[in-house]
Amino acid sequence: MQNYTVETEIMNDGSLIIKGLPFQSGDKVEVIIRSHKHGKKKGTCYPLRGKHIRYNDPFGSVAQEDWETLK
Image (cartoon, rainbow, N blue to C red):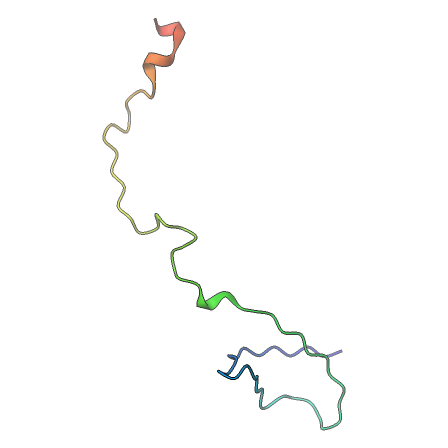
């Protein structure tokens, strides 16, 4: 079995046209259609990507008052 992949868009009327397939007339083929997530807004998976990060006290203690051994 020979696999062939092509990416295209669905027309407004819901039809799909694929031209230039590398098969002969009369060949039996199986068609599998998968949606491709290109239409998704960029950055929705990683909302903090590209945002500036500021550390007020990067080397300071975190929750020091919660440690019982230091009391």
